[in-house]
Length: 318
Image (tube, rainbow, N blue to C red; front, side, top):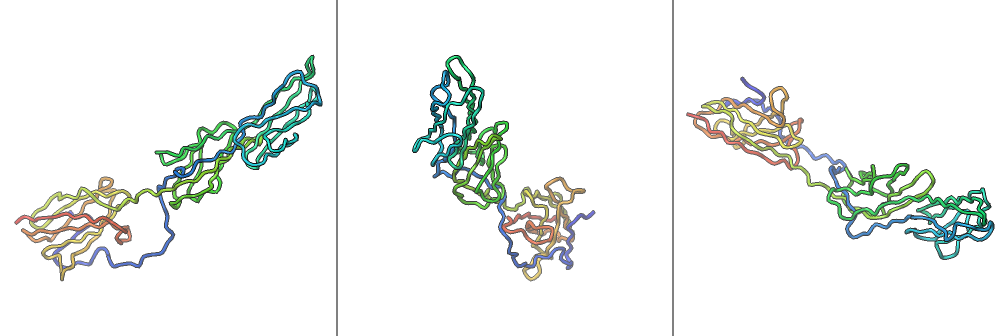
């Protein structure tokens, strides 16, 4: 019974052409790339961690109240509903009358925060309750063995967005990863955390995208299954992503003017175990040795670039 590759000593039509094809010029794609914070950079976190005031009890409406913004905010701060104190992270506003609420916000152009100042009547004047709205963003790790960058668990109500990153780099669930990005170092990538109240925090850093080593097309486990004086069956395993092979047979009756006899075979789900293939050779000469070269190819019967050639030796009986 014959399967997919059948040879005879007499000349046969070549089952697959191995004529050289011109290389097609196409955009290079990178798969299974990884991303990390570039080693020579330290992520810069731009954020507010709170807004406070020194005293909140027994205040007189109209008197000056000083608010202080804490955190790693950068640049000149701009306050809304309060008067900025030049050159500092502080601002002033009048103590609100009892029963009123004033929302004060501050930003440096990227990071932002706000505080609700609620005034309640008290026997000595008014008491204030300050409720700050801030968003935190953990510093991205510079040493990450998982080929991703983590910004921690994203709190409920907070979104994280990616900016100035190359195609193929994505942020999801607080994790920055790369799939098809072109390898290289990319500067000034940003991640911004924001909530519905308008609070934001921004982290700026450089990322290093690396390409995974390409998997070279290969086969392995080549072996002779059966052999007699005229016929042989051989088998082999395919490497990842490859399912076809060009076969070139060197030996008595198969090598004409130095050229081997050629064939073609592919994995067949109805006959082969996953990742395996088997070929049948007939018309061999008794008592001779034959070298079978197997070259990984696509279904178009063309060799795959950089394919690793495999060999199987057959010795027929007399």
